Image (cartoon, rainbow over all chains, first blue to last red; front, side):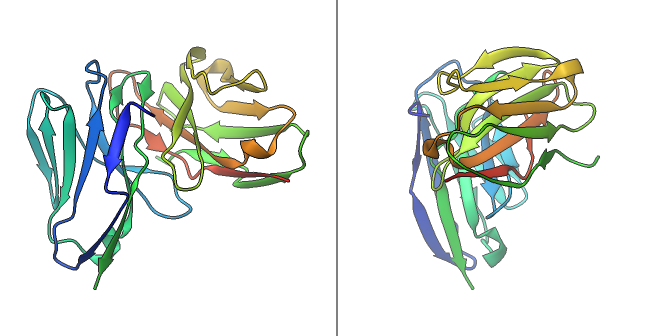
Length: 110
Length: 113
């Protein structure tokens, strides 16, 4: 887990805002870069993921930006809604092991 | 597709007791992972199975922890001689070979008194 640093720890935005969450990793062997969403009392659920051969991926209101040389990737949530209020985790890795970040608690104010 | 299920959802035990958790993965998934999550932290990898073979074990998995996956279907995680530091949410996830996406269960919350 020390191989992954996630920021910020918490984030508060107004409805319609664009929260951005960042993840930095050390291991250049990682080949899968996902973001998970977790609600209280539930297990994490995959939101969106990217492979290192592309720099950006968009699925609905969620976008991953990937910077291989900087060993960083980020999650952007467009037009954020109160229902997006949750904890978000990056979890780079691949195959046998994945390393979760410490999480970002997002609150979207109506 | 009924999703990943875990049993029990909550377990309260006294220090020194043994506990066992069960995970039933999605039926066609041959990969199975166990994680531990403490409050305010991300899940920490514990161990990984491909079918019935345990292929990876974290250094976090002390000798008191053992996991099995007989016949490559459900899996059990046993903690012997529990300690207060074992209190956490234990998460199970499953997936398919060649596909990195993991599907998580709801977790088992363990409290050691």
